[in-house]
Length: 300
Image 1 (cartoon, rainbow, N blue to C red):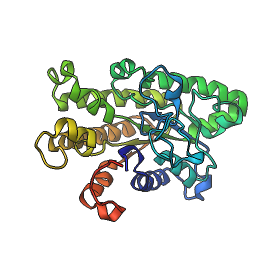
Image 2 (cartoon, rainbow, N blue to C red):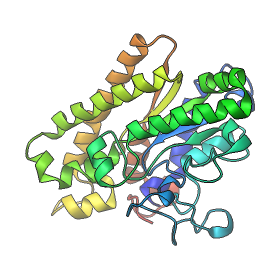
Image 3 (cartoon, helix red, strand yellow):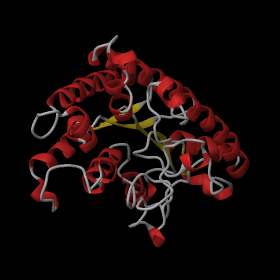
Image 4 (spheres, rainbow, N blue to C red):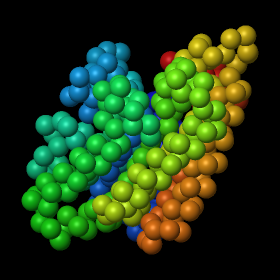
């Protein structure tokens, strides 16, 4: 099971965390829409429309999805956000913003702005020809204008205010950038790079808040040292997960939890929930049999 597709654990985390935003009503009435930002863990097909190597619109991606077709999701089937949308009562997930489906009444349930190979580090996203978070925000502004034309300004404002916002980023910044880029890892420690990323996270949240977001769910880092690619590249003779990478992930998670708490105090009406995916994923590593797996890794 790929790290990007570990649906069962993420579904539980997302669903219970998102319900904390609710007001006690039935799940189908909790939120009008879902707005998603970030990386490949939540990209539902935006990269299909970009000149980038980071695409998932070919087999074996999508083999367990509807009609067994690859959609651009970096997964064999549904993403955790897809299942969460179903759990919250949506008949379908919000469309990839760059897709033809992101038009008309489809915009009423939100939009997905995420892009594989993006992250908190804007420079890395640009080099990967992904959509940087700053550009994802620009698309969100554009979306608001389109939504107002479809729904009317009053209803559009209500959708923007009451929707749930999801942000998933950070893993690629470390695994696909920091650890393999000597121009960064020879200059900054992982702790210092983490501070830089958290600063970018805080700036993004403030900008998103300024655009109307009030309910934000943010994924923590998973145990980076347990990702098969990380074990292959950085494990050397270490058995199992790479301890150093997991330590870095835990350190970053502490920083982002602290930053989220500060932001919630600074920005009136903002609710932030940090989805602790580290603990869930690491539980798979330690107790794979609980999840129907023989080996505690994230490979298929």
